[in-house]
Length: 408
Image (cartoon, rainbow, N blue to C red):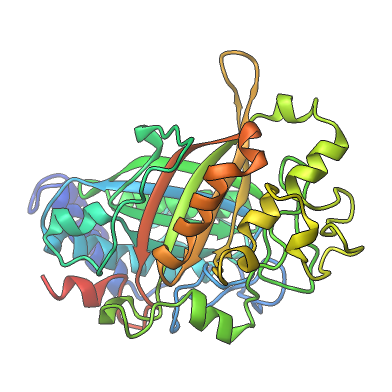
């Protein structure tokens, strides 16, 4: 009976497809009572396990960084808060299932005469520590006529920016992180399908090889230049630093408390030029040794950074909190390669993701310092950009952005 009703809806017997489809899908997904497990959930601490979706903060921010990324920014095709709320409700229901290793809705093989609720490519795969994190761009608030958080605006233009509008902005973003790329892609693909008629993908980015870690005892991964560039990142266990620098507090609106501001930047690396640069110059540019990752003046990666011992225009020195009055952000960057450009050069680099409590006390002063005189600028270029307000965690029975959209 449920399948028949759904088929009638899709053939126009009752409700038109399009914007209304999200609401219908949401009801079906929220009310589904027969989950289709892909695999038995295991402890989050184990590789490939389940990371809980519900909590005080969205998963995927301070959560230990997974190996793979699928990031997508969406444009809304409606200015109706009710339709957007229906989509987010459906997205949340699907996210709860996917992050716990279940198929979406009635699954990938539910009714023979209707399109499946789940696309199916993750059948048999474990949860792979999948996390899904949602944020809203400044245009989201303008389109839906909702009050923006104080001071939340598009990022200023930085010296050297060469931003492609087709890889920038977006009303809504989704960050999917997992240890298996197929699990991350499956998650975004299903959200795109569910959002049909309400939101469409504006731009997206796949990432691999995490370039920073929130696990202090782990070795910092290397970027495509061969350097460790995420040392001294905020640890997932350091509650004070997270409260001070990452989670929005009482200064923000109620719906944003426990959330954070996300900056996404697509940074192209001029790999071929870098590969012709001497080791000494490469190390001077970063201010760290290449093999160990030790700061100049130290011998081990995690030795304290003495900024006065680093070259004045080195990347680490300019971005270090000691050079910026204590400015600190949480980074979750990934490497990317998207084939080659028309000149045979690798289209590769860093997809930079950073979370902070206050943009004006986080990414903006850091990037201003780097844009002004970082020696690394000769070898990189910022070509895509987005900024998003990520609401606090989702309680059981609620959905992404519910407290915000209830204001409409």
